[in-house]
Length: 191
Image 1 (tube, one colour):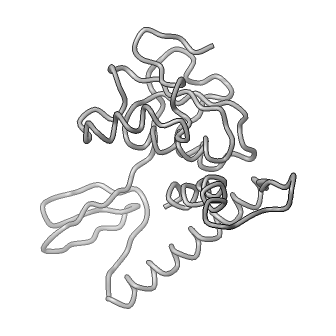
Image 2: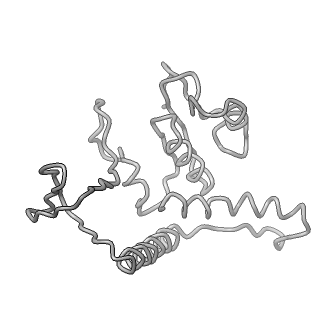
């Protein structure tokens, strides 16, 4: 959810440029500016609001919801924070947490997980993203949209392996996407 909200806002600069072709204009010398604090505050408020809505929907539907550390005891029993619950079926919906890659330097200052990147206190001027999958490309796109110089580093010959080939080619050749010239294939180093 956090990523979606940040993506929406990252398109504004591009949308304003597109709007010029449809008769929209800004006063001479005026360009939009970003208040990162307000952006993150708005993102956090929206996530809180949506979580409240989801909780009310679950409560209204009579769904029992438990948060905490759990373990499955047997085919019909789950233990959450030491309390056992039984049911005919158990749905395991853990969500996920980003983990640090087992690489040298993973604990250096400035090395972040995707979760931490979603809560940065200020917009980075320059960012290196390790990974060529959907989320890495998504992060690259929205950070670029907010004005960060982005470099995407990945193992394969191109990002988004297994995705629609025409879309991948278009993305890697798209100047407005901010990745042209910033894609770093295997064996290359970003300084």
